[in-house]
Amino acid sequence: MAEKRIRIHNKSDKPDNVIKRENDIYLQCETIENELPKFLRGYFSYLKSNVLPMTRLAYLHDVKFFLHYLISETDIAHGKELSMIKPEDLQQVQAVDVNMFIDYCRRYKVETENAVYMYENTNKTLARKKSSVSVFFKYLYRDGIVEKNITDGFDPIRVPRPGEKEIKALQDDEVMIMLDAVSSGSGLTKHERAYWEKTKLRDKAILIVFLTYGLRLSELQQLNISSFNFGRGEFKIYRKRGKESIMPLNKSVTSVLYDYIDNERPKDEQIDEEYKDALFLSLQGKRMTERQIRELVKKYTSIALHTSRKAGYSPHKLRATAATSLIGRGNSIFDVAALLDHEQVTTTQLYARQKNNVKRDLVKGMEWEEERKEK
Image (cartoon, rainbow, N blue to C red; front, side):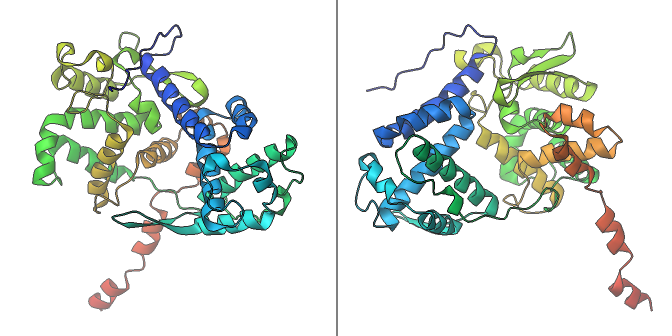
């Protein structure tokens, strides 16, 4: 039986693709909720009304994984399906069980018929999983499903303090190498050049928009032709929490977008009705997926970094590049925070602390081997 096509009757100001994306997240949440025990319906309602859809989805994934762990790795709910777990099973869970679960999540394996997959998580990911399970057990205690609040016994997880981790961003000279690569095809393999010939204007427009505005991947992926008002010199994006934001166009962005739309993007009559308004299209004439955009960015940044395609930067690193470049040009961190939609200016300050080329300048004065040869 063919899958039914979702049709949107949209009476809001948001474009259909944004509504569809939000609906896709809700459907994913509902799919997980239907796999979990029915007595957790109050928890589902709590998440729905108190956290963002993507956070809700992450919490549900974590709780589902935790319940699977109880079944497969402990005697607490051994040999049961997820939907068969009962309140008395969760009543048996102690803080030590959750601490052992978090430790298990550091490194674990999943076996399939064809392969064994090894997973390793950072402390940041472990902290999120701990948070998900903490909210879960606080809800269970609040609603009387379990008798004790065990969350006080959860072990703390140390995560890097702001500024502790090295910020990964392209230097200005590396940005130029990347833009040369997308403009001329330099650094691409023969196979990549064949595709580049058909998508170079699109690829360049994507990189320029990322570098200029520091957009999040989802924000760029959801851009439409109708998002832009070239007469006014502005375009609209949809941020987290459903916020709308108007962004000004500059000459470079306007130029690369016109070049792509006029000379490379398929004409309307060649595009399926569902994707006619999508700005960035794949070679199949569909809205580019986040994965396709991510791989595109990794490819061109790897050329700038002189590294493998796998080691190229993600779109989030181009967001960091935009931040460090703007601050390096003397712009106010408050203005940069507003452009990038940082909720706390302290986030933007991290990029201000990233002093470009300081380490390079320091080690330039320590050329031991060059000095040895000169002597």
